[in-house]
Image (cartoon, rainbow, N blue to C red; front, side, top):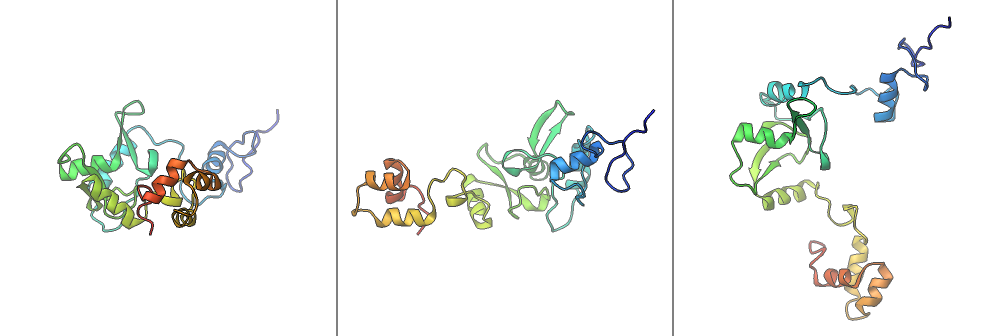
Length: 200
């Protein structure tokens, strides 16, 4: 009987799969792109582990530095925790911590805002309830808001916008729209400053 193949990563010693790596090394490569990645890697946390981290580590954290959420992320890069096991309800970590340390939000329109600008941070000292306007102002200050060219849906660049505005009265909106590959309505909005209003 042939000996089982061993993972090709030096010093591993675990049985290898089709890739020549054991399952943990294969998954490390799959998730990080680096078979020798130095950061720790787990397939899935044990049931209740994220909840335990939230209660025993995050809520009692007294440091001034960011405490990064080490588990799953939701859309837009915010930490996410599932209460009641893998089939339980998902919640955003920063909102849960804000509720547990600062009480319920003053209104249904309040955001749990990060003073540090780091969406994965779960340090209670960095979280507070803020209005949507205050939270957006924070995002602009921290440079985390996706506006202008940083927005993946932007069809024009900042220099395009400046040129579109400079062409006002020198070419029709239809001509400008054709030149930049956008709609006439988009040209109108740029020239009226109802879009890209922040750009001088």
